[in-house]
Length: 314
Image (tube, rainbow, N blue to C red):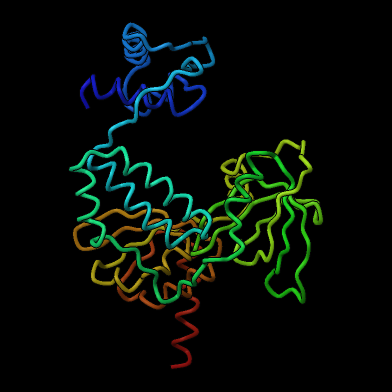
């Protein structure tokens, strides 16, 4: 990225938030703080009313706005790809909101980018696998949840927990939402249970924003999930799998704590954080003749024990 493009991108970043830290700009563009200061000085000299406060960050004087931004071809196709994903993996209200935003995005595109999106629209699809359920709901919980988080409003949820004989009314103080294994989840402080709980949004029968505000300061979603991960006993597993076997692992690798992989010559070295040595050992037995466990030793021993039991019955 040349300097002119970077300075333009910095200006857009400054307009995207109330306050932007110099360190955030440096990390985004992989530049030094000194370069950030120089680029911001260039914007100031160009007449942009930037307010800088030591130890806080930069902000643009309230009321200042630039004309609509021109998007690149890559940015335009990224919007279209995101639209396909949102259509499949969010509720109806969020989908409609994004479609409305896309009309505004398309309105500021140049003719060449508009033609590009029209031509490529039929060449991008997001397909669900056979095990994936349709998570579309008429309740549309996501927007209400996000509004509740933004306004710090108590949320009333009519919730049908798995295995419960009947639905219950929960008054919760929401922390955040995340998507995992085909479902959206809400993390919230549940007043009924007096503790933090996670709720699957497809089990919400009703979601209503209450007038009551909550004053309790809750952790951020990121810090909460990190704390949960620390409290759970996770086992680091490293194994090598023959490349021609990788296609048989499918989505099961995610259910077993898949983290990353490294491409070797004829094998792939995979790293997992597993919550169950027993479960991982039994999964490994399905393809163990074409793989090798490097660590931990406790997993190796359990696999040997299972193999011995099987051999004794043959």
